[in-house]
Length: 229
Image 1: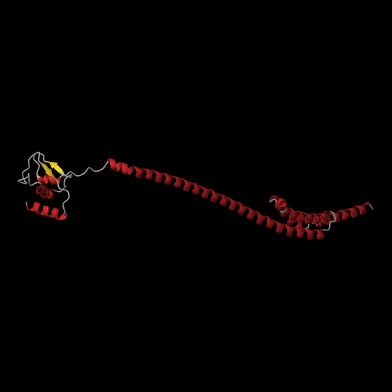
Image 2: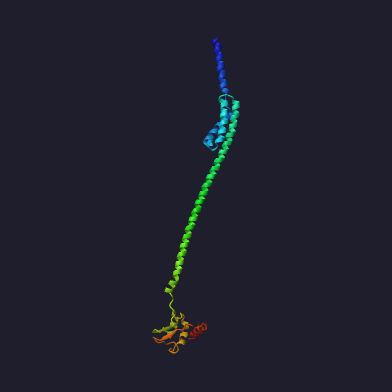
């Protein structure tokens, strides 16, 4: 009797162990649980509170069927639905984060462009200030030029010349303040014939008239005459 009870208890215990080993977690639960953890790490409850709450309710309904009613088949239906919602929500979170990152980059780009525009505007304003300062300086310089010209006016060309010892008519004609051309000496000679008998001989102290208003033909004739002598 005792042996029979023992055999029955062993059979019952073995049967219970087989039942415990055969009871497995619904397949969709093992898929949706890690995905929900990932959504939590990615702040899905904050970004999509209503969608995440709906997902959580579906998952908790499956949990109730699995743990309380032990209806794994019905629970797996809710776990599968929760998995589909989690995948969709994960895609939305990914898209939103990509959009937020793009918007942030766009703001950074716009701020950089605005800063560059402001820098260029400041540079242009500074360049305009420098240009105006240069214009004012040039205007002041141009206004001062007439005064400088008056102070540095070229002295009028002499209309007379006093002969120095040893000078000849070509030497006098070659002087910069006279004609700067030695071949024009006949013009001086013709205007001073009353006191020059020989063009090759001058006396110190002679006051010679220096003509200024002679024509081009007269200059040509003087050079021709000078070359013959």
